[in-house]
Length: 301
Image (tube, rainbow, N blue to C red; front, side, top):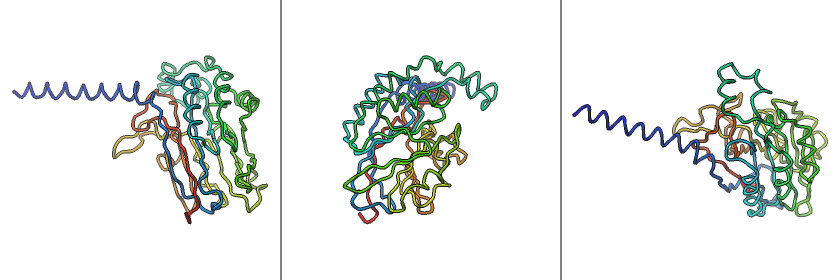
C-alpha cells in the first residue's frame, strides 16, 4: 500500500515537473501580452495628463520564438494601442556568448554555447524594417543595450536611424505635446558604454519635463530628482519568478530591487519593463512577454 502511494506521488511529481518545463520553454515564452499601467508622475504638467507611452524592451530577435514575423506582430499590437509616444529600450538582437565569454565561467560558456544561436543568423535590416512601421504622433525613440553592442552597435544604430527611429546615447531631443515641450533623453548602456547622466541633462531647460530612457536600471540611484520618470529594461523581470520567492536571478548589481514594474525611491520614479525575448536560457516562468503601455498623469489627478 505504501509502495503504491509512493509510486502515485512520484508519477504526480514527475507530471508536474514535466508540465512546468513545457510551460516555461514552449508556452510562456511564446505568449505576448499588452499590459496597461496608469502612473502618477512627479511634477508632471497637468496639460500632459493622459499621455500614452508604449514601451518595448528586450526583443532579442533571433532568440527562441522571436523572428521577423513575431516582430511584425509586436508592431501591430503597439500600433493598435494608438500611443502618443513609443520608447524602445534596447537589446533588439540576440547574440552568442563569444563576445562576452570573459563574463562567464567555463561551465556557463559550455551551456550557453549549446543554447544560444549564432548572431550572424540575425538579419538586422529585416527586423528594423518592421520596427520602422511603428507609429506614434510624437515619434519613436530608442536606446541601445548591451547585446546590441555585442552585435555591432554603431551599425545597428545607423540602420535604425536611417528608417526614422531616433537613437539616443547620452543625448536628448524635445517633442511638443499640447503646445508644451517634453524632453526625451537617452543614456548609453551601463555595461558596454559609459552613461553620462550629468552631461545628458545639463543642456535641458529647468522648466521642461523629462522622460529618461536607459537600457539598464542600475543607473537609477544616480538619476537626479529633476527627471520626472526613468524607463528601463534589461532585467526581463528575472525571466523566472516563483510565487513567494520572486525572481531567482536578475542581471543587476541590486538583484531584485529593480527587477520589474514601478519603483518609487526618494521621490523619484522608475518603470522597468520585463521585455519580450529571452537571454542565455530560452525560458520564462511567471514573467510573460509584455508590451507595456503607460498612461501618465500628474499626482493631482
